[in-house]
Length: 252
Length: 334
Image (cartoon, rainbow over all chains, first blue to last red; front, side, top):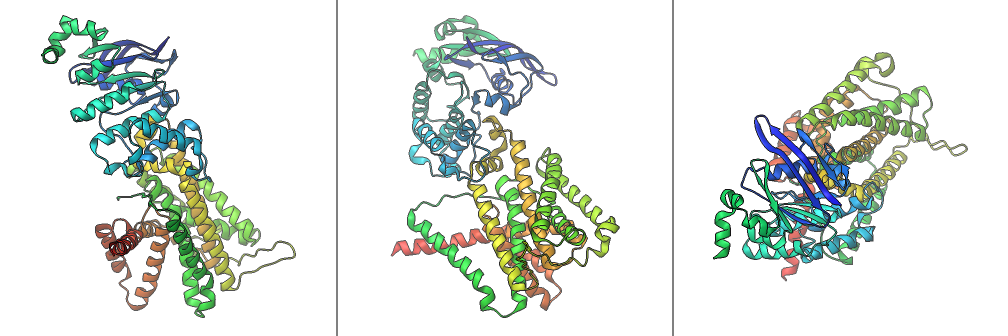
């Protein structure tokens, strides 16, 4: 069964056709990379799936249930989480609070008014666990704004993971990271449980090839090519418009 | 406004130190009527506690949820008028007038909040201001009910008459203790609320509402709930004020009152609950001292406000924090 299905998704901003009839089927548990040059419509596609933008036409299905046009919080409650290209955090709160706020939503305790948040042991334990998987355990009491950029990138993912998503959209998780940080974060994403379906936008081809089961190449708001990493690497059209240089670099 | 929530490290010692501090503060407040014979200072302190509740209720919106409400006087006024009218027309029973004031304010807050939270930022501010000015106009013009610009006079002192145990509070000391009790209960309740999971959702909304939606929160409902709670506590302070003053005029819900309580919150330190109480104390004390010597009170209040906004964003509590941490790090060095 497909975890996520996108059917002929159109979005135009005034005269600009940001997505031009994108269709995608992502299987449950799959790691799907979305690549393409700047302005190809990758982030717009994520915004359309997660409800930040309303499509001009087309449909989005999450586990066969239509979610087209729903509000972001409704879509999130159905098990879709995302990270953002630019850090989108609760900067004035501790790292622990950042993750716990997301974790408590799923646990349905957010309307509890008169018991201290610290008394909900399940949620706290869950928060600790997620912090550990993202190597943030020893940073949990620090205000998020005082973290390094790379660590903030990790919190960005930790918040999304804490909602216990079935489908996770990662928008350039490694953007702006050093090679060492990139390798570390790629490892963390690779170790995520198999029952989470992951779509990842990424420009770093090493990351893409390390993670992806399949790749979709976007170009001018359309799916230019789709296939396994080997197929995409061998695709002449893709090489021309986008991969060329980086693939030949990777080979040397 | 930079609002920081810090979680001080440290174990039992820091926490029990804090507890001792609060118990000493409470004991000092409880002993105050015994230590002073001045009716004037007792009445000033009573007024500070009442405005402390008012300022704390706004802090829930301003400091914790990041909602800059500029119409909070509406709830102070509606609470005061409701309690006054119930006392005059039905019965001057404390529990009855208080319940009526709180319930009517919660309903008013639901209606005002329902429309206002649809807008954000400066538009939210303008909507709350507009609604509160509408409430002001009603109080001003519905003369047969509210007394119009003459105000609502002759509010009888309420009693706590549980049958066979009538407690009247003609006595300022008794009224002080009742106010203190209600103040402490309000502070503890609001403390509980802000440290609950619900309170953390409010913090999340303050920090980044968009991300809250992305992790699955219907933020509108939470903002409305916060608005209703703040309105109810604002109303409670208005109820107490009607007992305290025995008279209410429309100026109690004019926009300058909304401005004054906002200044109390910001000067005291938004997002701390205790800070706004200190802010209320500072403003009321300064007002009393300055205006008995000169007529330049508004100028001086303006300068105080400018000082805090430019040089001490985190308010009085922020300054106290600095002093406290400074003192502690001095100790550690030796």
